[in-house]
Length: 141
Image 1 (cartoon, rainbow, N blue to C red):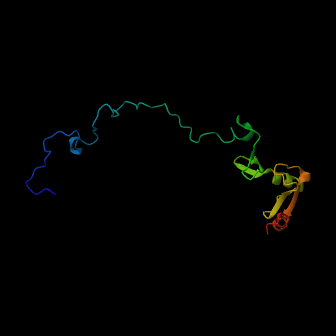
Image 2 (image 1 turned 180 degrees about the vertical axis):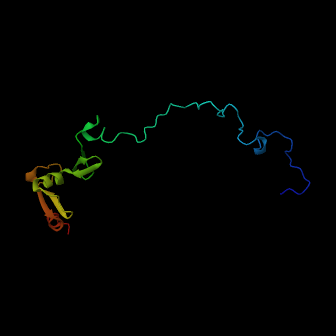
Image 3 (image 1 turned 135 degrees about the vertical axis):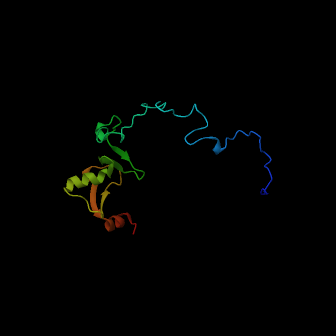
């Protein structure tokens, strides 16, 4: 129910613990102990050192890192993935075939494992074919 002119609120004169905004002058705060005083540095001055970018570029990357384990991982499909550049990975059987051919593989070329073992990346087990030929081989089309 809204106030009508001349009525007084029920809590007038009762101290509720809430300090009204009008009780302070501009720039003044409720607690002096938590306020930064002029000329006094903050409590954490100099404790946090910001380097501006984390690690320096190229210092702890790939072989230079203490956690380097050769740069190979296994994908969820069973292929071996190899790190070629910082933050870039390629499938190992495609890397081996590109080195053998002396050129980059085309997007539509597939490297097939002859013995169907995805971890056997020896050159005599790999064969380059088109997507159509690969689908016919696996009878997917």
